[in-house]
Structure formats: C-alpha cells, structure tokens
Length: 493
Image 1 (spheres, rainbow, N blue to C red):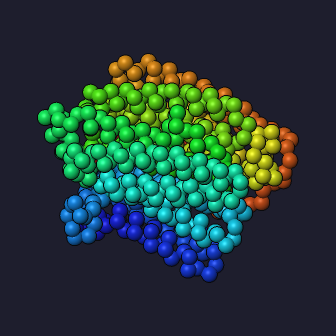
Image 2: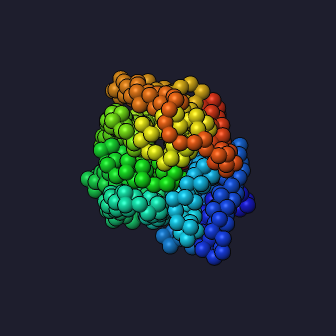
Image 3: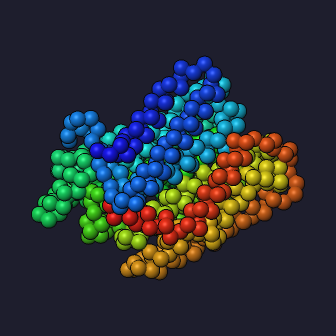
C-alpha cells in the first residue's frame, strides 16, 4: 500500500492525539499554537493527497486495523474528500488566527486550554465525517461535532451564550435522534453499515421491490435529522442566537464548517446509499429542492429585519445553506457539482465575514448592533474589507467565490426539468435580498461616525484576514479547475 494512503488516518489521529496533549501544557498559549500548527500539517498533507489523487484519477479505501467489516472500519478518499479536507483545514487555521484575540478576551484564562481541546475534537470529527466509509461511525462523529460545537458556544460564559447553547443542544439532540432512528431502520432491513455494502443492499431491495416503505422512511428520518442539525429552514430557530452569542472564532467555525459536515453526510447518503434514482421515484429530490427554495428566500427576509450584526450574518448562513439543498434537489450531476461548490464557497466566505465582523466589533468598543458599527471599517480596515468582500461575494459579484457558486447553480438549473424556472427565480430573488441587507451594512461600516478607536495591528489577525481574501478570490477565479476537481471526485465517490 502506498504511504500516501495513510494520510486520512494519520490526519484524524494527529488531530485527536494533539487534543489529548494540550491539557498537559503549563502555558495555555501553547495550546492554541499547537492547534494551529497541527492544522497546518493536516492542510499540507491534504494538499499532497489532492494533487496525487487528481493526477492519478483514483480513489481508495483504507482498512482501520486488521479486521474486516463488520468489526473493522473503513476510510475512503478520493479527490473530492481531499479537496474538502484541504479547504476545511485552511478555514479552521484562519478562523482561529483571526479570532485569537477574542479567544483570549472572551474565554477565561484557565479554560483557554480546554477551548483548544474542543476545537481539535471538533476538527477531528469534521475530518472523520469527510473520510469515513461507515454510517454508524459517521453518526458517532456527528455527535462529537454537535457536543463540542455546543460547548464552543457556551465557552464565552455569558447568560445569553448559555441559553443559546441549551437551545442548540435541544435541537441537536432532536436531529441526532432522527438520524439514529433512520440508521437503525436501515440496518434492520439491510444488515449493513458500510456505505459500499449499503449501496448494494439497497439496490437489491429496490430491484426486488421489498421493504420500499422502510427504505423511504429511513431516508426521510435521516434527511430531516441532518436538516435540523444543518439549520435548514424551517429548522433554523437555534442558529442566530448560537452564532451571535459565541466568540468570533466559534462563530466562524460553526457557520463555515460544522453546518457543512452534516451536509457532507447527506451527500454520501444520496450518492452512496439510496442513489439518485430512488430519491427521484420517491420525490425526495423534490422535497430537498422545495426546502432549499423556500429557505433561501425566507431566511434572507429574516436577515433583512436584524439589527444585530452576527444575527444578520447567521440568518444569511441559513439562506446560503439552502443553496446547497437547492443543488441537491435538482437531481442532476450538475446540481451535485453546484452543491459541492457552494459548500466550499460558503465555508470560506462566511468564516471570513464573521472574522471581519469580529475585528470591527472590537474596534467599536464591543458594539454588536449596526448603529454602533458605523465607521467601524475605518478603525479596522482589513476587518471591514473582509466583511465587504464577503458580503459582495454572497451578493454574486463576479470574480468572487459566491458568484462562481451561483453561476454553477444557474447552469445546473438550466439542465433541470420543472425546477428550472423556480430555481432561477429563487437565485435572482435571493441575490437581490442579499444585496438589500449587505450593501446598506457595507455603506454604514465605511461611513463616518460611531464610537471606538483604531484597532492595533496584530499579525495573526491581519494575516488571516488577508489570506481569507486571497482564498475567496481564488475560489471565484479558478472556477474551471475547481469545478473539474469536484466533478472528478463525484465520479469516483
């Protein structure tokens, strides 16, 4: 076996082992440095893996231990998984660098080491969700991600963050219960947990027309559970307060990465378990499409009414998540490619927006409302630039990541059936709504007035914001190669 095949397992193991080491550090600042160092290593390994697999055009499975299924476990990796791991690693590094100052301020000194442990466990869970080839293992790491995300919200230890974390936990438990019921039902009728084995078993059941109703119910349960956990409309009520009350790094990671982890599992279920044909015959793809279409409009309207900065950005996240559901619901290969592109674009863009907003909030004496952030971009120029570029990206400005994702969705919609007109209308209306709340916000932060003082230069924050900007432009301009990588990865999925 080539040594490069060890990278997925080594990446997950390295992240989890580093989390176990952090509590033994005498200086708590070392924990954050270790976390970011490990993530740089994982990003480098993921880049090497991506280059190798894209050039060879192959994917592989990696058996954990020496035991085959059902006792053993499998990891699977192709170009798409390597690309997701690379982008997730980069976003994690930049979010923790841009939000480092707020971590030191918002999290008690004696608990900053524990916060770093949480971030590593969360990152390890996301990597495991990307690479796992086992449905129950995916569920285990879904739970790890949910628990650590809730604790990341409450790490700020304000009254609002505690209430928000409890609400988050209630919704998360509801979603997890539905996912577990779906897994249990699917296991009862197939006796399999590995994705490859499940795919074969489901195909045989569909061909023999047996257990059709349990199959559909299991798909509905898991889709509903993952929709709740990913804050898809109308199950997004927990999201705004959870993101608004957390420290900057937590908000960036929760919105940019954690929500996408659940959608990666949903993508695996669609492609590698139930199959597009079964979803089409049971109208599951229509359900995903309608959830996406309504979510991208109603969540945008809700964002228009927000006076608090992070709440507006959080509602915007729910609207952007709906774009992914819209792509999945088109039921075509182009729709799946567009959904994956939106995962990458939103992960980078929304984390950048939260990081920029965090810098402006610090420069405005911790003001969290738009009336308090007037002129904030003048006091924190790179933070204002990150927010501006991110907002324009989500509005669909050409050469930015958000435009490329929307263009990909529009092209996919043209090849759909009855969904073409509603999808194009939804994209246009959502873009207009995005502009209606982002452009006034951008004009306000670059205007004159407001309280606060110029934010002192910090290399980790300013450097992270510059890299965020560069990555967003790369995702927007290198459209063809990235789309080809996604297509190649989906073909090998």
